[in-house]
Length: 118
Image (cartoon, helix red, strand yellow):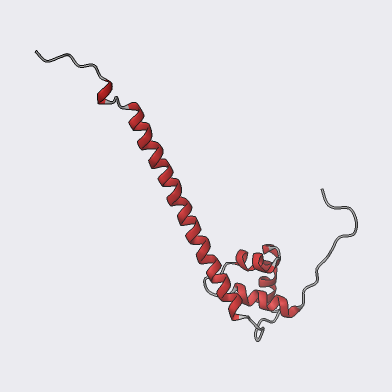
């Protein structure tokens, strides 16, 4: 349910839109990551990219902060590493559960009754 009262509409400058589009066009950078880092909706950034392709927003000469682009690439790399570690962790948990289940099902040799050898 929406909040009562007037809606807040953000107006972004053309320079902001152009720099956001230029950031999203950097190699190895995803639109969702740029939108998340700029606190805007990914659909809005996609719309700005379409407007830039149509020539409504001029992106040539728009300033792009190199540290922001590097930060986005680093964030993407960290996310990939995190996903890899989660997969490895899940696999190890399954392996531990499998081996402990097998040990519980197997009969221990000390509990079996042996007949004395004559």
